[in-house]
Amino acid sequence: MAPALTPTLSMGYLAALLQAAEVSPTDTALLQKVGLDPTRLTQADARIGEAEFSAIYRALAFALDDEMLRLFPRAFRHGALKFTCLALMDAKNLMVALHRWTYMSRMLRDDLHMVLLPDPASARIAIASTQTPLPCKPFAQDMLLKVVHGVLSWLVGQRLPLIRVDFTFAQPSFASDYLALYPGPVFFNQAQAALHLEPELLQLPIRRNKHELNEFLLRAPEDWLFVGEHEKRLGLRLRAYLAERLPLPATAESAAEALHVSARTLHRRLADEGTSFQRVKDEFRRDMALQMLTRGHEPINAISAQLGFDSTASFHRAFRGWTGDTPGAFRGAGATTTR
Image 1 (cartoon, rainbow, N blue to C red):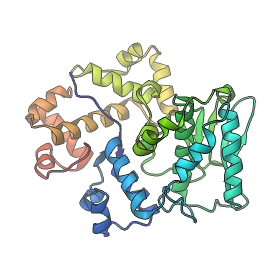
Image 2: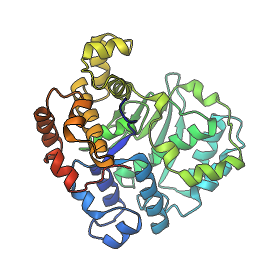
Image 3: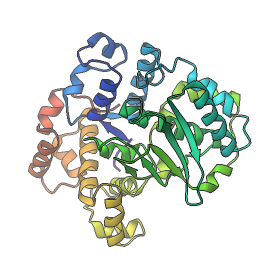
């Protein structure tokens, strides 16, 4: 049986976040303080796991005394998330909690705040401003909407499915990372940054209490950053199927049958998510290879066989295409991708 595959993010995503947080890749002391080897930032094909990314985020927020990592003109000091949650926890339902949150955001900032825009087709939680473009860094849209979605999901005790997520900035090179971050399709170059939910979700009751808050805060952002197992979109469901299938080969037709859709629907829905069957398959085998090379000591030919390659030579060719290195050179360099 293949080892469990946890979600990962590209080093490009982390590097972009650090750049937005005004953390220089040459600030070795700070990077080491938050648990990140600076040399990893230059490894374009390296990956970072959810637990490690969350730990780095927490350490960085503490070091900067800003829970939003300098992404906004004014810092979100330590305790901002805690008191936001406390203000929402005794609300009757999600609608009331959201009205409170949007009201608080208008009280705290004149130039940038959240708005709830109910609609028969979708409930839209948007970032609004009197200024164009938004008076915050592009990455701030991602983090703010992620916090909003995460806190609301935690309050009602379930990860809220999303109809779609909109950002005003252009599609970044690491756009495929959003597959693991949001349980809904992501669109770029939109008129307004927003989360779109089914309207009936606003009636969900608040289920959390103060006794549960500390654990949530201690683990943040791990509990709400990544898409959970039960709410995966088709691309991540396909990865789960590929993991179960190993080391047997998988085709689009066999995957479609296992996922209870037609092959045409599989291709269409993957395209809607900004990916394809071959891309998901390649990225899955890449992530598995990176984890197996860094976590264990299995011979490379055994890893090749477990990943379903018909020969070690074909595995070498694929791996060099993913990383620029051979599997042996990658393992020998001691590169760390996830833990």
